[in-house]
Length: 144
Image (cartoon, rainbow, N blue to C red; front, side):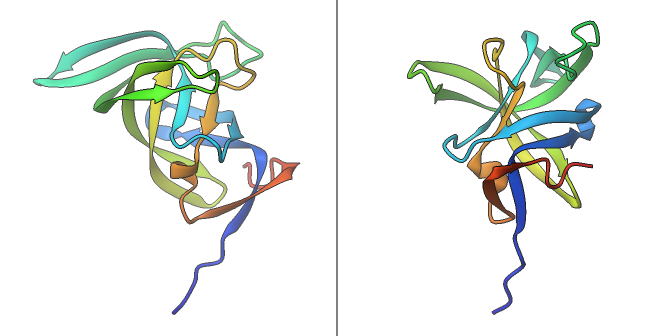
């Protein structure tokens, strides 16, 4: 049986979410979180071609809050998620393409308000899958 060599990533990485027009987003890799989550503003559910979509704004650069990316994506689920502070909330879930280093793959992301957090996005263990090993002592090992 052939095993693909896993890529070692750090506790912080920079990823691309090309379908959301995001080229460089610093994420915190969180093996304790099952699902990835993304901080968004002005989140609304809309119907597009008879299907539910999420419309939202992202500030991809934490150092430049004036830069806003308007996004929309089809909803793939609505889930009850328990956050790190123990409170549960209903969150919209989208699926989008992630790019980290040489890897490109589909991930699910819950949309939420992470304004009180240091990073706009958590990359959870479902997104990491069998592709990556995390070295918590390192940062930006595979960022482009």
